[in-house]
Image (cartoon, rainbow, N blue to C red; front, side, top):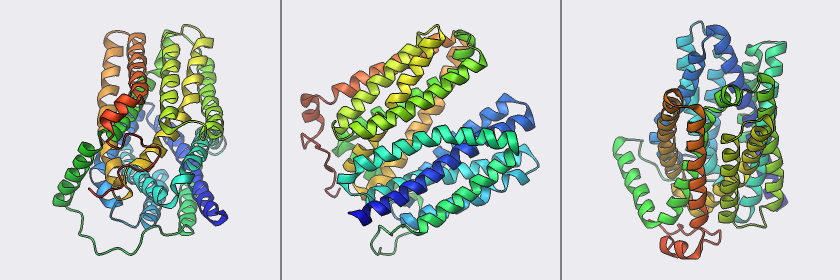
Amino acid sequence: MKKEWNTMNLLLVNLGITGVGSWVYFIALNLIVLEQTHSVFAVTVLYLLKASAALLANIGAGSLVDRARTKQLMIVLQLIQAGLIVLLPLLDTILMLYVVVFLINIASAMYHPTVLSYTTKLVAVEHRKTFNSYKSLLDSGAFITGPALAGLFMMKEGGDLAIYLNGAALLLAALLTLLLPDVEKEREKQDSLSFTMLKKDMVLVYRFFSRFPYIVLISLLFHLMTVFMTATDSLEAAFATTVIELTEGEYGVIVSGAGGGILVGSFVNAWLIHQLSLLRLMSVGAVIISLGYLLFAFSNTFVLAFTGCFTLSFALAFLNAGFLTFYQNSVPVHLIGRMSSMLTFIESLLVLFFTVCFGWLAEMFSIRMTVVIGACSMALLAIVFGGVNFQTVRARFCPDRELKEKNPASKPL
């Protein structure tokens, strides 16, 4: 038991270093591009590159992850990102910077399903709730410390130091990954990745969708919540400064409050996670998040806006940790990379679509109306999230009647 937790703690340290480094890199890159171009649109392109890279990478990432040795693939992807990141300060043109950033984003998009697959294989079912609650706590800490460190580096030494330190952090993470155990047995020789293989994998995922619609329903609801949160968040700054007419300082306090909400929520989640079922944890998280967005959408003062942002951020840990554990326990490990890539591909498409739609609605009509639409959409999804937990709905969609935090999809397809 002690040795097992020592290994899991090493993985948590690895993920924590990567998480803080990614925030330092993300904030520093945004500020560097803004400083070089003095263009808000140039910064917006970085977000479009990230979404586009996720779309491209997830076409075949799942097929690769499910057939690869995940530990070795994690190391390769970390080294690729580290090598490309340290090139950024040396680039002379914004076009070359965009090209390298796009390649970094592809490696990052492939890294996430790889980590998910490795973690699912490494962490035993009975430890996943606790592990994911600790991971959520680390993510919230990275959300707070990463931007703070990036700002400190930018003030003292400029963006180049922040970029180089992130490259060093990724190199350190790769070295720590070397210390982790291999989780795959000896494998037979695999066919090379091809269009035919991708077609077969899509058929396999579709068969899983058809056989376990209850699991797919929960997964789609979670990803739809993420889509509407992302699209609504794209208007957050404009809503706060132009609709509620907050100062930049007040908006900064709201952003800090959101970080505090994530941190407090992660601590509460770590305390409560064994008291609630996974589905109840997700339902509670979805309801509180939607209430926070509704409060923010209808706010007209700093206090209401702050309360709304703190509330929605507080509940993120419940939804994220609950879904991650549910997903790991419900999807067979040999299929988890392909399922994750397929759902992430759909999510990325919807994020692009709804972000553009929300921007157009805000431009043509009003920002408040658009934010209210986003908040009401999340409230509707939260109601559905609660509804799928009732026994009659569960019996209709899940042939095993009760998941009971076991893997109902463990039978071969």
